[in-house]
Image (cartoon, rainbow, N blue to C red):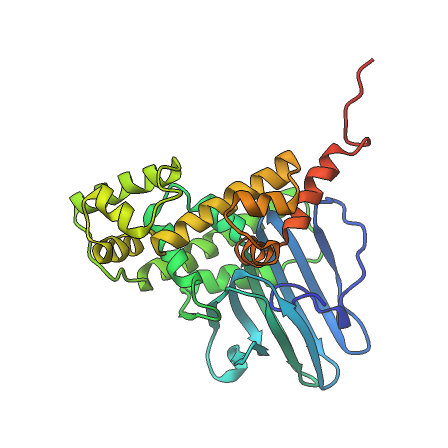
Length: 337
């Protein structure tokens, strides 16, 4: 079943209908049903960045169940209330809870249960941005500080960061939530610009809240950056922690603490992630068999590889390989004269 905190639950998922400006992976429609009325829209603005807006009223008391996938979620409730649970945590957000607006960021590090509690006559007006692991890795690639902050926050499942949005961010969210059902090109571009401004403010909250466990001076930062470059080049692929520490002239404990402060994750977590990144490329671009990709990534068990792969990217190795097969299908190949 689909995840409702980031998308529409199947129990009241609207049927897709044509849009004057079609877009890949988009869905926009009214959500009128015996259980709920209003508007639900879910749209992928760019690969791995998903916008959902809801402007609905519940017509009966009802619980809707679903599943959330690994991602970073940013939610802002601008009207009514949102009453739901993620895993074992309960959330109740929105102006009708006694606050003028309510917003938060939640790290989903592993698939978990979602429950939405509907209350008859209750309105729910909210904006949810979902950042998939791919998006975070791509857009924070050149910003080492932001990369470390995101990794530190996303390393804990259901980590929650309360966000107190500025009046401008609230106003932008209200404009998005209450925008007309069907808009033209200019309005869509304006909507996406509003999303990016809200996203920037929310991620700045992550950067402001994250604290490094070790303060790094300029020399230490440069030293660890050089180490990262050597790791990326594969120099230490078969080395133990002690071997690496000796080669870089640090104690094992100092190396562990320093690298985690620098990169937001332990040295071996970083190395494992790099191998998984390489395995994904082999699956998607070269069509390597899943078991072969697991071996290349250092996993003796394909099931363990699949678990780690899905946790990092939000989809399975077989799904990654199917993308290669889709690109190689006869309908996709250009046939010469």
